[in-house]
Length: 537
Image 1 (tube, rainbow, N blue to C red):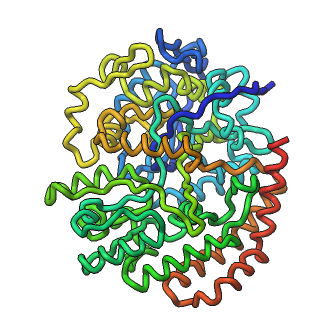
Image 2: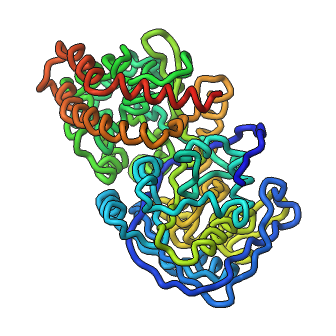
Image 3: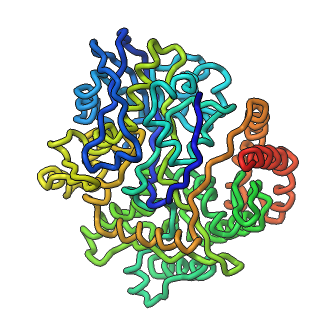
């Protein structure tokens, strides 16, 4: 029977943001005995998760894994890590990537038509919305017998249990080796060289930030100082929290409950703030439609001078800017105070908690379960994070060394870390379930570690928290939430940008807040708090 021991583990470091999604295909299946879990190396953190001595399949098993192919780290089908997986487990991974822009559409089609490949990368929402349809394999009956490493990882990461649906696991979540993770999230990043050039002090609150952006615009009239990506709602999800409230449904730590964020004063403050920035051309006029590539071009060219987003991108922006201006630099601001003088911010949980689901139609599913369990072992995690032992890395106890000959191949690339990970087939955006940020911290600009250390101090000071997962819902709640979220999200999508653009007057914000509440916001709140109450008991 699947059981969990109560265990407390320290939260240390946090993992690289940038989540990948996934997608298409079918598979070739051979009846075989199951894949191995290798024994941990001497001196490795084996106490965390030892490997399961399962037998290697006598015949090679081919498993098709579909996932999103990110432009920041393109997938390589015959990457060294995949070759090493075959060598160690006798399982061949047929990796089929789908362009990131097409992923959600194709994934939805595959799930709703029950035409999944063997393995598909999915989100928590996918698990919540579709587990009850029977399209995903219920993993729970297989775990005690075939997945001891996975169960040990879950014991050390309580948030993973929130991915269960009706008390069952339907996916293998992507978790992190927290002892080797960076503290990453969406934080305020500004061109400090321009602050110095204009003799401006670093802003300490959002009003001061407005004044600084105004000064930037005056000095550089062709610029649009603040730029965002992926639409306004992406930014609102973390920015409204920094203003003291939340967006959509969110957990409010001061009250230990879930609140629908549009009901908070901070939501109205942010919408009013963005409306002002837009009117004064301090916010990119194309904010509603900017792609990540356009956002990157703005910040890499000097067209935009501030962003509140994943700070790790600043390493690449600085490298591009400094080719023309060696003094150009994005650097992290201290957290900005809200209107009450308080500072707070989300950071990413080092575990992304996207999951790999197995099709309920897959043949010999225990073999696939064993493969994933091996990937959670120390030996499997090393392969999926670093590549081939003895060639791409060496381990001595807790220390992993990546050879200079490998690092030097990528050090001059625009994005050394993701270029190396792409070539090796390793890390969060590749086929991996237990991530390690050692490669990122080794090959990247030293600024990355400096910023990670700053976030760690803010976390220790209780100014930063890991963004919590939603509580697990029962099937009835899941069905209610599907209907309510569809209704409320449509309302938000149709109106948020109108308020920012000024095509719907700010005088109607209060009425809009009530409309969201009566259209389902209040009911969503109640469902979340009921589910949260169960998990706290």
